[in-house]
Image (tube, rainbow, N blue to C red; front, side):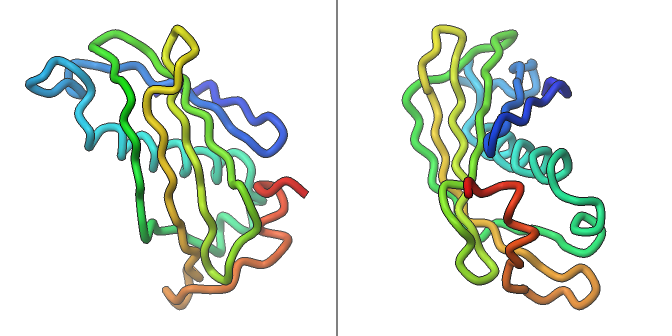
Length: 139
């Protein structure tokens, strides 16, 4: 993962380069690695944009992932991941989208995940306050 993220508007980008540990027996990035990268960019987006007091008070967990695979990359190749929240939260949950774009500009993997917010102190789900959602949702 390239640690030079870019926040642009309400989207966030991060690059990932396939290392030997990411490659499966078919010679390309394993499906579980794409899933890990979906979670990695979501976490990086939160850490880059959320207010410090929100990071101290809340945790996130995934309740659902949907992934469409249209291509892949091999060892040494890099993709640019772009994530965004397409709409307002629904109670304790929001949808996060991620597209992985190869060096030709083609989206090769797309994910749609549902994330839920927990209160760190109680461990219970909480309705997402507007001020927590604001940096992530186009308004």
